[in-house]
Length: 495
Image 1 (tube, rainbow, N blue to C red):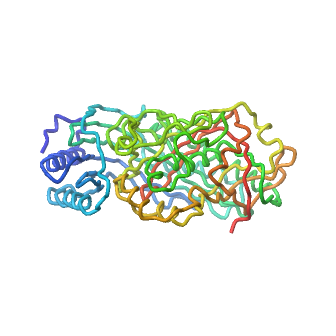
Image 2: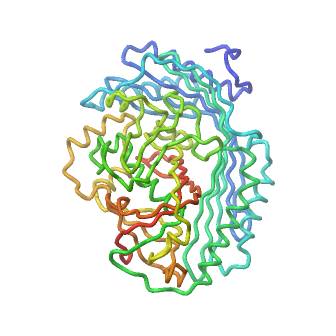
Image 3: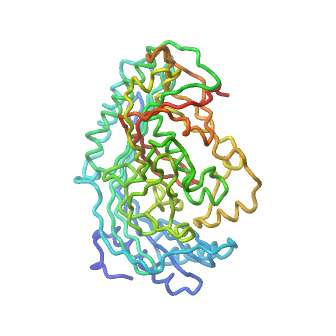
């Protein structure tokens, strides 16, 4: 196994993960069945806290070490993660990965970068690590946050705070080695009104301990929104084609949904209604996929050891480029920009995914956005996909080999409803002369692939929405900074 002097990690647990990574790399390099492999050694210091209206229900701190590996064998890739770091367990997990690649029988062989070598160290975005704050302080922050809603009539208040100080070394059989540190923290919380809807929020950051100083604002903003909803009378919601103003947060949720159709493997699977060059929105619509220091979704390198760089996805309303990993980029003769995003916790494979979407601001103020609009949407709930094939594929398992998507497409029937979904409206108001005139409940926006083309105004004020989404069982972080927009879409009663 390796000499510890070659690495930045110092403790016994860190060294154990690094030694396991090096052992696996040596073993895979020597195996004739393996054409290429990536291996990561991970050390994490983690916190998990649950707080309700009755106080803390769970408060734990623990460390976790593990290794992950993605192995190309017989043209297909398989991904594994294990916390068992003894030699016998590592040999078993490597053998399983190799066999899985061989039996996948993928029609087109996957590609990888055998020539570009990266060697680097990235110390993360935090000036103070999240692990340097003690457990009691984190519990107090969450308790004080929930107390911001103490004056409300609530059936339930609940919060789950989680953080991880992650030290990771990733090596490849082609010689790349990077060491990264990441402090990722998040809180999911909800306020269930006795006389209204549930107000759910996510806040996340990779800025380290600074997140604890900012998270109170997220609780206070949610409590203010819940207060406004509680004080509003119910109003009759319009149905059919409706002029809708979206808040920056609601627009961010919609743009995140659309970004899934700009993932190359989604197109290979036959599930995207868009291609490069298609018009997707008005001429003023510009969307980049960026890497913001301290963002919830920020990383310096992706799972393929590619530097994460900005990507222009949409320019003047037309799709300019898709999101790629190394394999799909080679297929389309473009350069990968670091979009092989690791799953949270590393237990599932990395996926092609956006990092931090940045939607350019327009020049419309709030009054203009709401003028002549029938409904103002603050937030959506999770969308429901209309097409059964798309629904099943998004929720189901998928190998760590992006070109296998083409095999699925060859075996599937046409799915004309791919790209269409119902967006349940979670927080919204009926508008009269641009002013709120009652709360809207029990309706959904009917999204079809041409909805963004109806955008008539883009706001000048932007906000950021964060969250976690699932792609083939992999839990992935997302962040979107977007302005509000005004558009036309059907609104229907929710089932």
